[in-house]
Image 1 (spheres, rainbow, N blue to C red):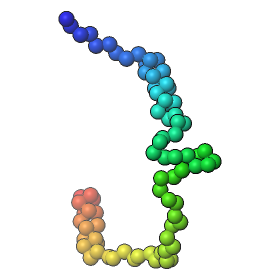
Image 2: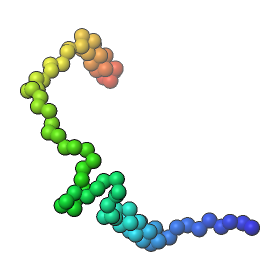
Image 3: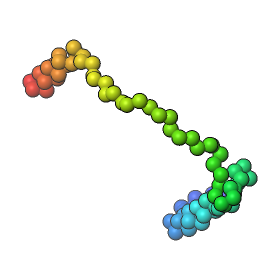
Length: 80
C-alpha cells in the first residue's frame, strides 16, 4: 500500500492555530503558582528594587597605534 502525502489546507492550518492559542493561554491557574487575594497570580520571584549605582563615567577609548596604518593601507588598496 502506497502512502499519499496530502498537503495541509491553509484554512485548516489557520483554524487549528486560532483554536490552539486560547487553549494554551487559558486563564486556569497553575497549582504551582497560587493566586493572591486579588486574583492575580502571585509572583514566584520576590520583587526587589534595583541596587543603587554610582554615576556612570564614560571610558575614553584607548588609541590603537596600528589603526592609522590600517586605514592608510585600506585607502591605498581601494584607490589603486
